[in-house]
Length: 530
Image 1: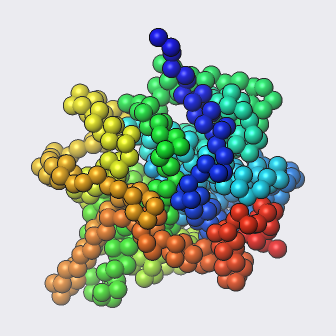
Image 2: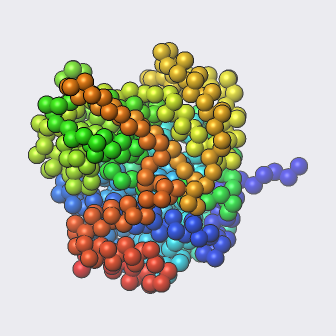
Image 3: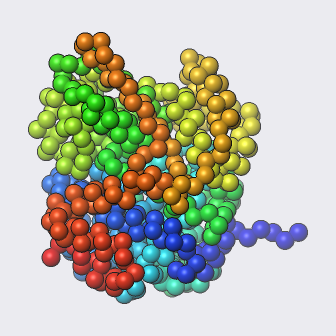
């Protein structure tokens, strides 16, 4: 029997052979949209003086690659590092199935592309390569101790793949670049992620490592090509139940086409809660005197993220008088804070995630916060699982979840998080939700994209007895949603225009949408302060 090739070798061979002409139009469109969105996220954070002060302390040398919000030029690994830190700070990024891949895939590609003077087609190809490899690695660890943005290790391979593509490494060199990047994987610890500004570095550090790994592979450094599957290797540390099948489908299923941008600077799990709140505010104005209570029903992911944020907030008082952290990080991971901002401002953009704005509105934010209750609804979580059914590997993973494996997961999550996957009082609701899931058709592509459902429901109770409810399942920032391109343009002009001016921002957005017609130097110049 012929032994299967190590997974890094398979991934490396695919990255090395990937050419611009092989990438479908919808995947290239997604790459342009992702580039525009993450640049907007950088400029949103760049307006916050606190964030700029924190990131200004890095010692940087000179070089060919640009740090976007400042225009400073440095070496490619450092430029990718700082841009990724800015893009992470306000949580205004995007997601694909499965992972927040843009921090590394885009900024490694941009920085290295500038350094090597590659054209924009090469950079878009590298962005796609980084996304496809990084997202699959995240999906392979879906049943593991980390999730979402805490999958910081995906940026190791995202940056390494993008850099290897631009360096034009061969299949063996690219495989070693991935293996070198994974040799000593950093990962996020909750106390350093959910409240302090060290969260800004979650993508930055592994992105820098990934860029350097590809350069090292070019010089002849080697890595363990079986680093993923070795019994002492990556999956043994980062997955309760590894899902190697999630690495399949390269060149057949383009995960970048599941792109969903954030329309609010907060956790992806909260986006539809904010949109539902906006719908309710459009129906009837709210004031603190008018409202008795707000109830936000969310998924298990949204519920646990909020709990993690609360557990790691140092200044919490008793539950009846809890005081949340009013910072960009606190606003991103506590659904109560996110909705309090919506109710205070009547909307939520990069200027509302600004530390100074939140401090100026502290009293009102806290008053709204005390009226908000966040609960879990298993039916909403089941709809998230429904998204996995739209991907062949996702369907296979769900089918493999036998009762014994499920019991192993329950025990593992309890030991890791000191919380359970299932609450006793939710068992009946879970049974109904899973039964409904079985009756649904398998999700299919819409507008050239697979939908990722992350539903939320918001209910506002007024003093006069009126109760208004709204529930949304698909974020409007999904490529599968028809309004997404217009929303992205609005976001880009608003956030980038705060620094470059509305006209330059609008021109910059148009330039990204027609990136292949421009040189990379011209494109970067349009996205950088003069």
